[in-house]
Amino acid sequence: MLGVCLGAQLIAKALGARVYRSARKEIGWAPVYWRETAGRDPLLEGLSEAEMLFHWHGETFDLPSGVDWLAYSDACPHQAFRAGPHAYGFQFHLEVTPEMIAGRCGEDLNAADVRELPAPVDPYAHAARLAELAQLVFGRWADLIRRGGA
Image 1: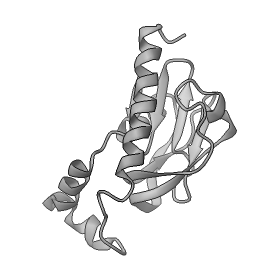
Image 2: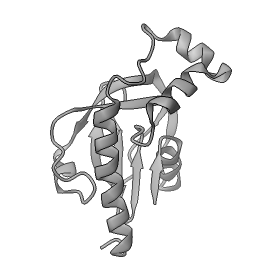
Image 3: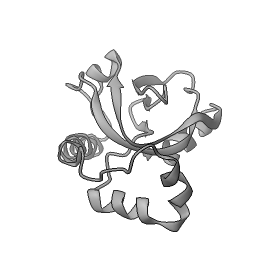
Image 4: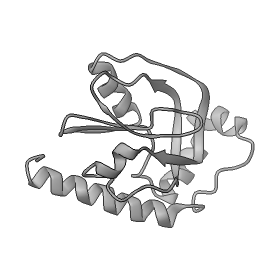
């Protein structure tokens, strides 16, 4: 199972952790820092330098007990975790494209959030690297599924 954003929050909640409003919303591009545990993780192995990833959330969660904490950001300490060999939660968005980001920024539903930002979100700012990371991580995810999670 791979939960992204709300999906990560739901996995955390299902594992007994608290989900709650963040001290501040995290919207747009922001660095994610990999913990040492990420270096030993099947999906994130080899990632050690901070990466500019895309975020769009106002909630966060406590880490469920017994999970491997994989990543954090300045605004959100729990950006990624793994529960056992088969369940991942990513608070950040590797799956988005510049077109998806532009669309989200232009939606009436998100107008209030966008107005609160200090500067407009540039959908292309880090899109090339994000696409590389998405291919790497989701490719490894597909390999993990093909191998039965082992």
